[in-house]
Length: 368
Ligand code: ADP
Ligand code: MG
Image (cartoon, rainbow, N blue to C red; front, top):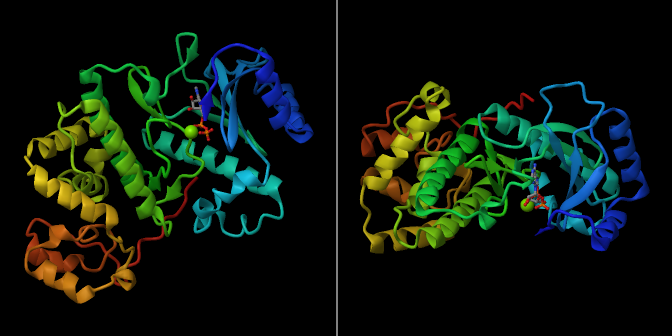
């Protein structure tokens, strides 16, 4: 999306009229009457699927904890905007039956906005920095406006970073990705420097309407893409000066059940610090550059099975496991895969087994 500078000009007006159909204007009117937003002042960003607008804190607001300014994300209701969203929402058990056809675009776009609200809340509960989600009505999502000074906090893409910042933010983001996957049980599915804001010197995750449950049929593909985007961006910025994990080892760091910390330790107050210490240890273990490249190429082109029924050549994989080459299997140590008990031979440190007998991922009860 195009990020529009502060100010009101004719082109802002034009986009406003184009996006704000009569029904959306009614929704905004009712949000304003209820004291949730104030007038829409200007457009922060115009995108293919949504525009984001700025609204001041409503004069009526009595809640002292409410943010001082708001970002109002308005999803487009045009049919074109849906096509690309379909693959994300299909396969989501949270939305079963709700998104079945394109017969009712208003309803579909509402589901989309609702999904962003719920994902933002889940991430927030999981201790990940996101804008506070305030309200969603039809195709309108109201959230905290993340500001640096007078303007919107910059996207990571536009932020000016020292090399120290780059190293620090890299580690912060890898830890966030693990948190998101292991604890919030979500895959962002559009993670890149465009959907991360630099706010208060920290990484703030945005744009989570397409994020999927970790057990979504395509979640592994989405996660691999996310890892790739993040790796690409930091490779460019580090200019070879900062150590990064290979794609494959990033995958392991994000998805492995056990990186040497208990669940309580990871979730506790010191969790972020503890996980970055482990990451630091991983980074200081040298990897041959030639190996790494080969490893990553295999990683990017491998099919990652979700359960045993999808393993293409189980015999080959069992051979790998028994010959002590479990590390060549991308999925070998992931939760819920029935191959894990065999790992006891290959990897003596893996002693616990909580995988289900069928190898299917545990269904995740959605608590929100
Ligand atoms: P899109 O689907 O159009 O990519 P995003 O959620 O990524 O929608 O928002 C588009 C842009 O709007 C972001 O890149 C960011 O610059 C700005 N933006 C979005 N949410 C906020 C927010 N809460 N505070 C400040 N700026 C925001
Ligand atoms: Mg975006």
